[in-house]
Length: 327
Image (cartoon, rainbow, N blue to C red; front, side, top):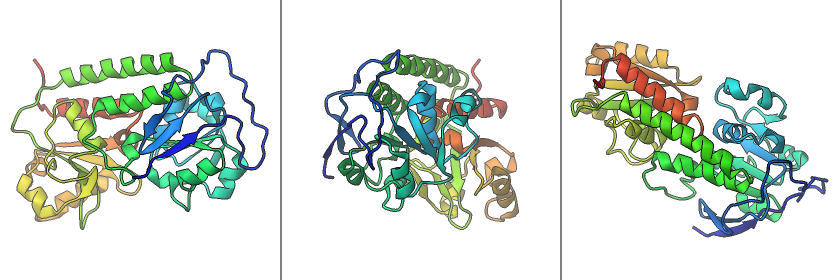
């Protein structure tokens, strides 16, 4: 992977706009390292960006959680309704596209920085590749959880999510806000983990989508991170990747005792339950026989400020099922 140095030039315009470089009250100069490695791209961040477009819900909500809405001149690609505590701030930010904006829409917005959670945001038919943005004077940041296939990632942990929040806080000159948010989430995750104790008999299947060929939470992605945070064993831990395809015979062989059903518009949890109950090869699984399911909204299964919500919801769901309840 070729590293690129992308200097973030505040006020740099795609089409000669007039972005301001005035720092608002409460900001400090960027405290990011002189050269920050982000998915193989070296970022140079001398000043906090002032005209930011966010791609993907997780990136948008990290910015809002850090109180950076006045720096956001556009956003795109939600998976779910914005969290209620950020709804008012979000409503004031232009939505450039329901999915990813075309290059001309991004150009018209005149950003100096693009922050995305998925590498797909930087595809040629979306915002464009990061080196192309660099050539236009536009900095960029990609969530480390979204690096692959841009850059293979090691097995992630909760600290990787916190590292992203910390880096964004540093880039935008609000390190204290990032530290406070991380401290709050760390305490909440510790409480969730303490609410359940895991037994060796439990086997969790994380089912993202797919019926002919199921996509599951594999060894090395955010689903694995969420399960690991509360000590829940992943029945698909041997499957490489983040969310990856497996086979139903492999699921039958694992015989999960709990199935985590990711609930999304394209693959609702209710439809998954109906499929399991109606499929002869699957209806006798231990989890199906005893209706041991935990539903998680898709938006809580991505790395960002909702990661803590996914961990808390999984812990509460396991507790409700009587799985490893602490004394």
